[in-house]
Length: 113
Image 1 (cartoon, rainbow, N blue to C red):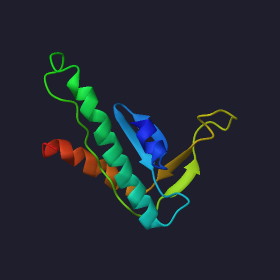
Image 2 (cartoon, helix red, strand yellow):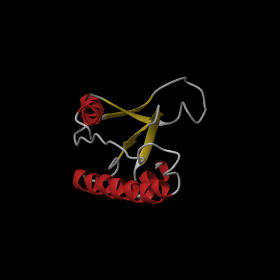
Image 3 (spheres, rainbow, N blue to C red):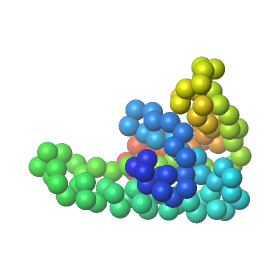
Image 4 (tube, helix red, strand yellow):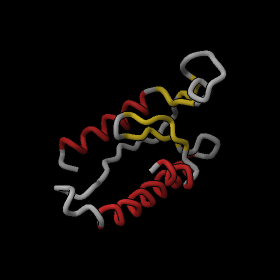
């Protein structure tokens, strides 16, 4: 899934459990970022189709994914230990927009998404 995000010009911010936080449009107008995010969603959906063909007898339900997406300004910065490591040098997104997207994703589970 991370490759699908990166191939559609997204940036993988972090992995949280089985989830991925990604950022689109960091250096582009908002409309371009939205288009990139939608392309990533389509690409990820396409990746699930072949995965669900093989382990039918091993999984009780097909694999799927839930998405929370929100378009608005965020604070971008580098968080973590102040060392020259890959983790410390990565950009992360902070702010209300990130929280809203997370809540929307959580609501998909409650609503049977």
